[in-house]
Amino acid sequence: MKARNLIIAVPVAGVLVAAVAGAYWYSLPHYPWLFQGAYSVYEGNATVLFIPVEFQARLQVMEYNSTHAKVFTMVNMTALGVSATNSSSAWVSFKDKNFTWPGAAFNQTFEGDYHIEGFGVRHCYVAENTSPAGKGLVYIDSQTLWPIKLRFEAVPAVSIDICMVETNIPGLR
Image (cartoon, rainbow, N blue to C red; front, side, top):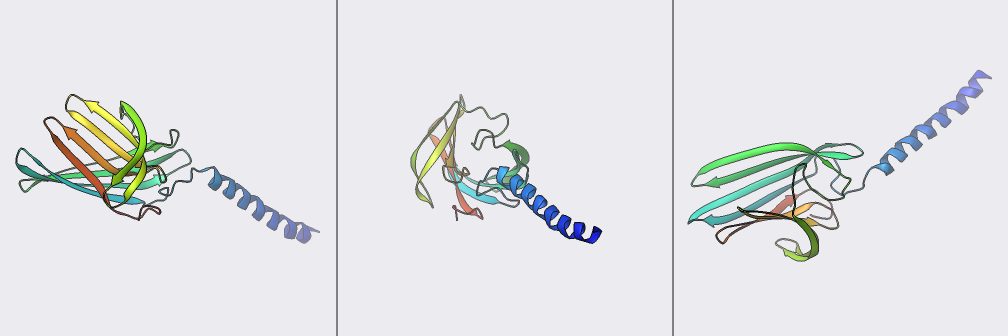
């Protein structure tokens, strides 16, 4: 009798574990970039006051749970042979279904079709932050909800486009 109960209990337990694991997996947001190690690399350059400036940036998913992803950022700027690098990580919420950083104060968001270098025309959500120093725009691909372009416009008449050049995210390769 005990052996028979065990024979029945083991498959039932297996089905229950699979059901709980499946329910947990289906409860997670399904973004193409939601996997450990998802990354993208961005590059751009500009001339500021006759000085060439190069920018490189990297975004990478370090870990995630059912409500947030821990995203690492690294930004490097090089001018006149001198480089400055800044890196940080933050937990980003899935709640808004928008790629925004804690503490980021976007004045407005809008959407439309934009030509993005390396991608052609893509439908994007655009988050804009305007300050006395200028304007920052983040172009977020509407299909993957991942940033594909950053644009900075400063006074007087300086604009810098930092575009994605490498990624392992499905739908953006």
